[in-house]
Image (tube, rainbow, N blue to C red; front, side):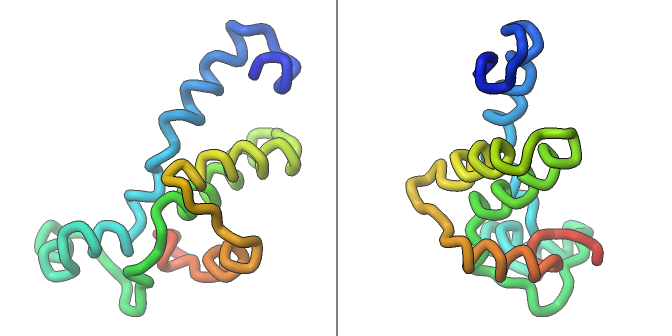
Length: 115
């Protein structure tokens, strides 16, 4: 990992740990929360769930999209961010097709974004 990032191990180690920790980032998306606890209970807990949220969204794919965006915002090359995020996104053994990811990226409310 350090070699791929062109960093010394001490600099690469926090990134590696961060990437590993992000594997379930997508569990924070509204669809996963509703799937896990039910929309009524989620609203009773005080979470605001917009109407029309995709309850079948795969949390790994949400993790993949969010992580790729974050890495690119932090000056990772698109290619490396895309590959690392892809590895995180398919950590349950299911890989999203590029068209599925593009569709999901367009569904910002199911990802948990405000806009």
